[in-house]
Image 1 (spheres, rainbow over the protein chains, first blue to last red):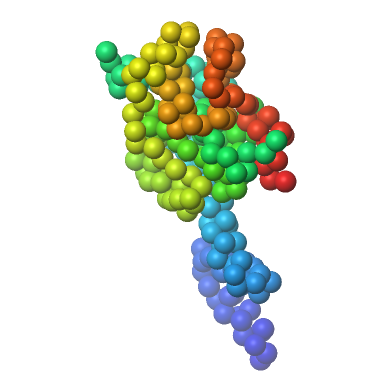
Image 2: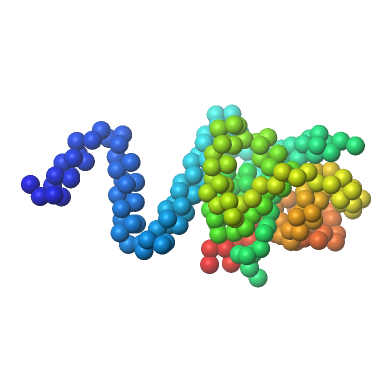
Length: 95
Length: 144
């Protein structure tokens, strides 16, 4: 059995739920293989940043969807934000 | 003109439209994706507004996000000074917009990215420019 065959066999033996992590790790290795060391950590930080942004956005959208607010148009969202702004300012800067 | 090396402020609407990945405001999400290439300050008033819109778990994720680039994304915990707020109130700003304007003046910020057109229509002589997200993406070299 070649090394590649053994690797494929090991991957196939994993539960499907692990496959996204395997793919992430393969991506990690591919990036590492073609990126000079001094740029590597920066590249990884950027990837982490984009992933964190995506995760936050997805979590926020899911909650809004559950609350029935995701389909609000820009005008409705802006109106709510303006109201929140005034309420907070009135509380913070009451004279 | 480039904002690559200038501290700017994203108004709350940019953050919220961006996090919503709002279909009718696609530039806002693209701006958030470019955050790690910009220098963005978040004044106290805007932070409080974000906090009001996010649940604790989302806020934790928000902090995790911005802490990846502490030299480029900063939070300010200072309240705006009342005399500066009142100056903008006298120019016609609502209290909340006046607080944001006061923060920008106190932080010496020259660019506010916002979809809030009230800043254009109501106030003359602001010491900072207000640009829409689309304009920021198109005109200031983000991602180039």
